[in-house]
Image 1 (cartoon, helix red, strand yellow):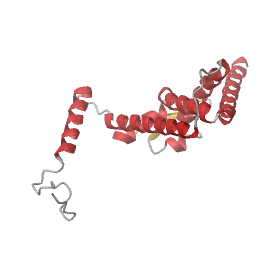
Image 2 (cartoon, rainbow, N blue to C red; image 1 turned 120 degrees about the vertical axis):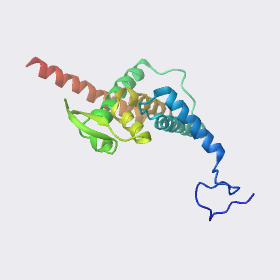
Image 3 (cartoon, one colour; image 1 turned 90 degrees about the vertical axis):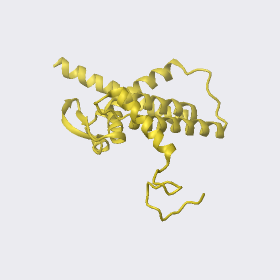
Image 4 (cartoon, rainbow, N blue to C red; image 1 turned 180 degrees about the horizontal axis):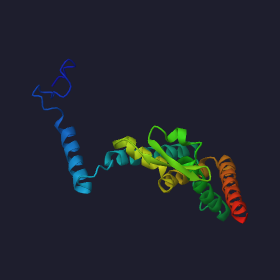
Length: 187
Protein backbone atom coordinates (compact mmCIF):
# COMPACT_ATOMS: atom_id res chain seq x y z
CA UNK A 1 0.00 0.00 0.00
CA UNK A 2 1.42 3.37 -0.98
CA UNK A 3 0.29 6.77 0.20
CA UNK A 4 -0.32 9.32 -2.51
CA UNK A 5 0.47 12.76 -1.06
CA UNK A 6 -1.47 14.34 -3.94
CA UNK A 7 -4.82 12.80 -2.97
CA UNK A 8 -7.20 15.27 -1.35
CA UNK A 9 -7.47 15.12 2.42
CA UNK A 10 -10.13 12.74 3.65
CA UNK A 11 -9.52 10.13 0.91
CA UNK A 12 -8.69 6.65 2.07
CA UNK A 13 -5.39 4.96 1.39
CA UNK A 14 -7.21 2.69 -1.02
CA UNK A 15 -8.71 5.64 -2.92
CA UNK A 16 -12.29 4.88 -1.89
CA UNK A 17 -12.79 8.15 -0.07
CA UNK A 18 -13.38 6.36 3.22
CA UNK A 19 -10.69 8.19 5.14
CA UNK A 20 -9.00 6.59 8.10
CA UNK A 21 -11.73 4.29 9.41
CA UNK A 22 -9.94 3.70 12.73
CA UNK A 23 -9.75 7.43 13.48
CA UNK A 24 -13.33 7.88 12.30
CA UNK A 25 -14.59 5.08 14.56
CA UNK A 26 -12.80 6.64 17.54
CA UNK A 27 -14.33 10.04 16.73
CA UNK A 28 -17.78 8.50 16.33
CA UNK A 29 -17.42 6.60 19.62
CA UNK A 30 -16.31 9.76 21.40
CA UNK A 31 -19.28 11.65 19.93
CA UNK A 32 -21.69 8.92 21.14
CA UNK A 33 -20.19 9.13 24.64
CA UNK A 34 -20.51 12.91 24.62
CA UNK A 35 -24.17 12.79 23.52
CA UNK A 36 -24.98 10.10 26.10
CA UNK A 37 -23.22 12.14 28.79
CA UNK A 38 -24.71 15.58 28.16
CA UNK A 39 -27.42 15.12 25.50
CA UNK A 40 -28.07 18.60 24.06
CA UNK A 41 -25.80 20.54 26.38
CA UNK A 42 -22.41 21.22 24.83
CA UNK A 43 -19.78 20.00 27.29
CA UNK A 44 -16.12 20.17 26.24
CA UNK A 45 -15.28 16.53 26.96
CA UNK A 46 -12.52 16.49 24.35
CA UNK A 47 -11.07 19.62 25.97
CA UNK A 48 -11.20 17.91 29.36
CA UNK A 49 -9.42 14.92 27.84
CA UNK A 50 -6.73 17.23 26.45
CA UNK A 51 -6.33 18.79 29.92
CA UNK A 52 -6.01 15.37 31.55
CA UNK A 53 -3.44 14.28 28.98
CA UNK A 54 -1.47 17.50 29.51
CA UNK A 55 -1.56 17.02 33.28
CA UNK A 56 -0.42 13.41 32.91
CA UNK A 57 2.38 14.41 30.52
CA UNK A 58 3.64 17.11 32.90
CA UNK A 59 3.54 14.68 35.83
CA UNK A 60 5.46 12.17 33.71
CA UNK A 61 8.06 14.80 32.80
CA UNK A 62 8.51 15.71 36.47
CA UNK A 63 8.85 12.04 37.38
CA UNK A 64 11.38 11.45 34.60
CA UNK A 65 13.36 14.52 35.68
CA UNK A 66 13.46 13.22 39.24
CA UNK A 67 14.62 9.78 38.14
CA UNK A 68 17.25 11.21 35.83
CA UNK A 69 18.66 13.31 38.67
CA UNK A 70 18.49 10.38 41.07
CA UNK A 71 16.09 12.23 43.35
CA UNK A 72 14.51 10.03 45.98
CA UNK A 73 11.01 10.66 47.25
CA UNK A 74 10.86 11.79 50.86
CA UNK A 75 9.29 9.40 53.36
CA UNK A 76 6.92 12.21 54.32
CA UNK A 77 6.68 15.98 54.27
CA UNK A 78 6.95 17.96 57.48
CA UNK A 79 3.84 19.54 58.95
CA UNK A 80 5.37 22.95 58.19
CA UNK A 81 5.88 22.08 54.52
CA UNK A 82 2.32 20.78 54.30
CA UNK A 83 0.87 23.97 55.80
CA UNK A 84 3.01 26.16 53.53
CA UNK A 85 1.99 24.03 50.55
CA UNK A 86 -1.71 24.31 51.40
CA UNK A 87 -1.69 28.08 51.93
CA UNK A 88 0.55 28.66 48.89
CA UNK A 89 -1.72 26.49 46.73
CA UNK A 90 -4.74 28.49 47.85
CA UNK A 91 -3.06 31.82 47.13
CA UNK A 92 -1.51 30.81 43.81
CA UNK A 93 -4.77 29.33 42.54
CA UNK A 94 -6.64 32.55 43.50
CA UNK A 95 -3.96 34.68 41.83
CA UNK A 96 -4.09 32.63 38.63
CA UNK A 97 -7.89 32.36 38.39
CA UNK A 98 -9.32 35.53 39.92
CA UNK A 99 -6.70 38.31 40.13
CA UNK A 100 -7.26 41.46 38.07
CA UNK A 101 -3.58 41.51 37.13
CA UNK A 102 -3.55 37.97 35.73
CA UNK A 103 -6.71 38.56 33.67
CA UNK A 104 -4.40 39.20 30.71
CA UNK A 105 -3.47 35.49 30.85
CA UNK A 106 -7.12 34.42 30.94
CA UNK A 107 -8.41 36.91 28.34
CA UNK A 108 -8.11 34.59 25.30
CA UNK A 109 -10.39 32.09 27.09
CA UNK A 110 -12.74 34.30 29.12
CA UNK A 111 -14.96 37.37 29.03
CA UNK A 112 -14.85 39.97 31.80
CA UNK A 113 -18.13 40.17 33.73
CA UNK A 114 -17.65 42.39 36.80
CA UNK A 115 -15.34 43.20 39.69
CA UNK A 116 -15.48 40.66 42.51
CA UNK A 117 -13.86 42.75 45.24
CA UNK A 118 -10.41 42.55 46.86
CA UNK A 119 -8.60 42.94 43.49
CA UNK A 120 -10.47 40.00 41.97
CA UNK A 121 -12.75 39.77 38.94
CA UNK A 122 -15.58 37.52 37.80
CA UNK A 123 -15.22 36.19 34.27
CA UNK A 124 -17.24 33.84 32.10
CA UNK A 125 -15.74 31.16 29.91
CA UNK A 126 -15.99 31.55 26.15
CA UNK A 127 -15.36 29.34 23.17
CA UNK A 128 -15.91 25.64 22.62
CA UNK A 129 -13.92 22.45 22.99
CA UNK A 130 -10.35 22.79 24.23
CA UNK A 131 -10.65 26.57 24.50
CA UNK A 132 -13.72 26.26 26.74
CA UNK A 133 -12.10 23.57 28.90
CA UNK A 134 -8.96 25.71 29.28
CA UNK A 135 -11.17 28.67 30.24
CA UNK A 136 -12.89 26.60 32.91
CA UNK A 137 -9.53 25.54 34.32
CA UNK A 138 -8.27 29.13 34.26
CA UNK A 139 -11.30 30.56 36.09
CA UNK A 140 -11.82 27.85 38.69
CA UNK A 141 -9.56 28.05 41.75
CA UNK A 142 -10.67 24.57 42.83
CA UNK A 143 -9.70 23.12 39.44
CA UNK A 144 -6.39 24.95 39.14
CA UNK A 145 -5.58 24.11 42.76
CA UNK A 146 -4.87 20.51 41.75
CA UNK A 147 -2.36 21.70 39.14
CA UNK A 148 -0.75 24.21 41.52
CA UNK A 149 -0.49 21.72 44.40
CA UNK A 150 1.00 19.11 42.09
CA UNK A 151 3.57 21.56 40.72
CA UNK A 152 4.53 22.79 44.19
CA UNK A 153 4.76 19.22 45.52
CA UNK A 154 6.99 18.26 42.60
CA UNK A 155 9.03 21.35 43.40
CA UNK A 156 9.45 20.25 47.01
CA UNK A 157 10.89 16.97 45.75
CA UNK A 158 13.01 18.30 42.86
CA UNK A 159 14.05 21.76 44.13
CA UNK A 160 13.12 22.03 47.82
CA UNK A 161 14.97 25.26 48.66
CA UNK A 162 13.52 27.25 45.76
CA UNK A 163 10.06 25.80 46.33
CA UNK A 164 10.12 26.66 50.04
CA UNK A 165 11.01 30.23 49.03
CA UNK A 166 8.00 30.33 46.69
CA UNK A 167 5.59 28.70 49.17
CA UNK A 168 6.75 30.97 51.99
CA UNK A 169 6.26 34.05 49.81
CA UNK A 170 2.79 32.97 48.67
CA UNK A 171 1.81 32.11 52.25
CA UNK A 172 2.99 35.53 53.44
CA UNK A 173 0.90 37.21 50.73
CA UNK A 174 -2.13 35.13 51.75
CA UNK A 175 -1.66 36.12 55.42
CA UNK A 176 -1.28 39.75 54.37
CA UNK A 177 -4.54 39.54 52.41
CA UNK A 178 -6.37 38.24 55.47
CA UNK A 179 -4.89 41.01 57.61
CA UNK A 180 -6.00 43.63 55.06
CA UNK A 181 -9.52 42.20 55.06
CA UNK A 182 -9.59 42.09 58.88
CA UNK A 183 -8.34 45.67 59.06
CA UNK A 184 -11.01 46.88 56.61
CA UNK A 185 -13.71 44.98 58.52
CA UNK A 186 -12.63 46.58 61.81
CA UNK A 187 -13.20 50.14 60.58
